[in-house]
Image (tube, rainbow, N blue to C red; front, side, top):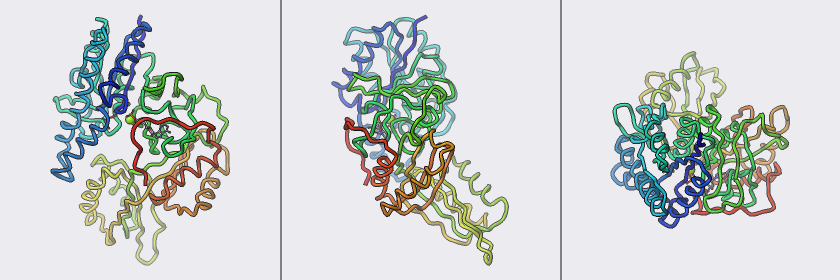
Length: 423
Ligand code: ADP
Ligand code: ASP
Ligand code: MG
């Protein structure tokens, strides 16, 4: 049987028609290797940002359904153009949107999860010798509603399709040469990792390394899909392979450093110190589909018998969180106010090598102290330590930690595209 390779190309890789021609060449080369090829593409360049901006001209909080209708159009443009480019180069290709490709999701707008992929149509077209081009980021519900998977979600579309087709591999083509020890735009001397475990990559992606959508790594791990991250522009190395931890040799305590600038800290002050309050608060947020990241409950004050609960959410969920908390305040008997701090960033170090190696956390805290950076919250997992710091300190913190944990390379990494706004 022929092998199936799924390739995914991000926005920078399809930013204009010349770049789409370059993508067509990469796709055709894989086809010439004797493989069946399914290609997943994102919207061209900054299209999605531009569409969001237009929607916000009407309302700070546009209808989630209409926003998904709007944002899904971006990928509609790039699939058709790529199919045309492949056809113009003499190969048979067909483009499918999520409805045609059978990408079924739950009925939640703006961050729906894929629940099933009905692969018959894709398989039939591969059998006919066609290169199949599928729209990333979008899905469809059982009753025909269009959904999106969350920003950066095309990675997840690609891995889910690879899992459903039992593909040999899912290659994520992007504007960097692989996964680096940190964002090479923050530290140009970041080192490219030849391989990284699913577990570490998952933590890095959740910690803000937006080279991969976290759910794509989750899906790859669950279905054992080998993933590779590599450059669309420089094909002379194979990038980074993401695979199971047991296959890897671990030598350094820290594999990577990441910063997440999209979080907001919320403190609910003077919450009654009695059983059930935290459960009520967080189940309400869960019901609204708001993911909570770090949580700290302060020591109870004896006289008032209250404490404060601080937590972080994604800034995109701030409005919804505020509404939910306002509604809950009375129900919970909360007297105090709700403080919102948008001037924060989460800085994390990740590494399977930190297990059973004492001193990694203290080295992190010491490094931040030496830089005069105040830590506002701390959270840990087995292979990750995160500190919440002021936003303006994020870049500096990442650079210092990257150096202290010995992650620098002697080479400068090359990144295509625009610089992110970190300060
Ligand atoms: P695409 O449009 O191809 O999906 P993204 O912008 O989503 O590309 O992801 C690629 C970007 O991720 C890189 O340009 C880089 O700035 C950023 N990035 C953040 N952390 C890392 C990391 N650890 N390794 C590589 N790139 C990273
Ligand atoms: N176009 C979508 C975005 O910009 C999805 C993606 O690029 O993965 O978020
Ligand atoms: Mg991306």
